[in-house]
Every structure is written in structure tokens, then in C-alpha cells.
Image (cartoon, rainbow, N blue to C red):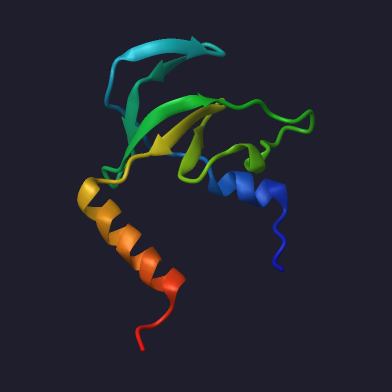
Length: 102
């Protein structure tokens, strides 16, 4: 089993260089919460909630669902996967789960 330190994991889950794609739907710790944001690779993320830090300053990565990422200061966004890629991903995972064709 591979173990990762939580500070290393939470650094990997933080979004950088995003641009607002949707309207402001609220504020959290003085920062606007946008309905959608996009990263530099044009992947779209939609607002999913907020996450607080531990007393020592790190986030708890176990509180995030799959495809969820953090935009400082703790705003959580979920990556949106286009339908064409979702179908391909689902079939690939299905093949992997069933095993190789015999």
C-alpha cells in the first residue's frame, strides 16, 4: 500500500491559473465564488462546496469526492467531463473491470 503525506496530497488537489466562466453565486472568506471556472487547459469545473483547513493549515483530502479540486481559500470545484469522453472512460473502465477478452 502506498502512503502519501496529506500535505503532498492536498497540494496536488489545488487549482491554479483559473479564469471565471460563470456568474458570482456567493462569497467565501472575501473571495467570490463563481458558478464555473476553467483552467489553462480549458477544463471546466463547477462549484461543489467549501472545505475548511485543519488547525495546522492543511486540507483533509478524504473529504473530497472524485474529480473535486480546491481553489484557494477552500472553494471546491468538480471537474466536468464532456459526454464523448465520459462514454470512452466508462467503456475503458468496464473493460478493465471485466478483464481481457478471451
